[in-house]
Image (tube, rainbow, N blue to C red; front, side, top):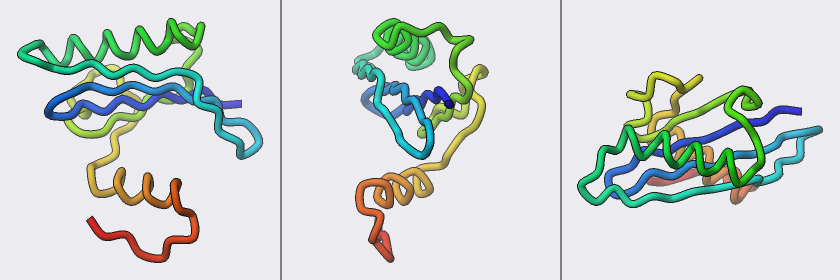
Length: 104
């Protein structure tokens, strides 16, 4: 079993999600969205992640992998980063596995 978190640091909002992956099955455990509105996006990233952890009943040490997108590459505590085009393509393939092409 793998516990993974995703954090998207966008231009208008910060989103965090936590998933459990086991035997090829994904389970969405928690999510949080915080609007930036003149606040520090780095602080909001930590807050969104902490809230998602609390919702899932987990601690940061329980998370095996923390992936970021958007400006999340700037977060010192991430494990890996996916650039926007890669994220869009993977998200589209996740939602429609039969897709043979993805346009952005």
